[in-house]
Image 1 (cartoon, rainbow, N blue to C red):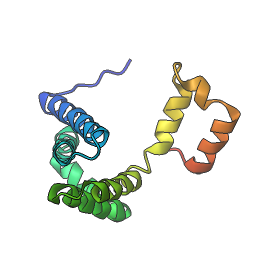
Image 2: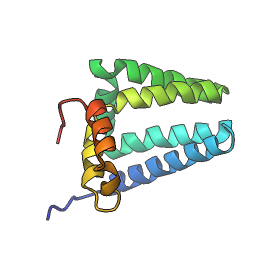
Image 3: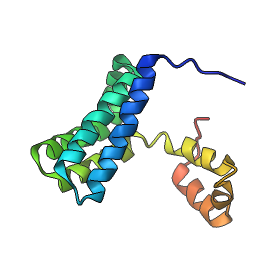
Image 4: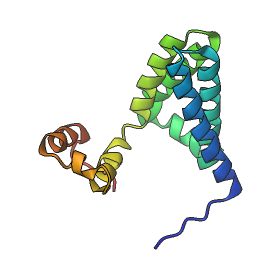
Length: 140
């Protein structure tokens, strides 16, 4: 079995990322509350930076392949911070989907092999949908 050595910086980063997701969810649940959404965004970005490191974060957001998603996510973050949460969350959602589009095939394979929910994702209709959206290449 492979063990991962997680230092304190990574633990704090994962915690901040988790709280960022929680605050963003609460902000959406409370009809786009500006305070919760702004806190969620700040915690999420700082958590990702601490988890993977500042250099890796900058490299990820400045890859030519990720420019469109980075710009949309940044504009959405700005719109939430200045008080336009609905438009900001729409831009952030688009940016998030574009930025992490390379991760969706890995997540689909994981969900298909997961013993708890795998039976849902192994259904022929769901498998055909995942195959259509996944494309040909799986980075696993």
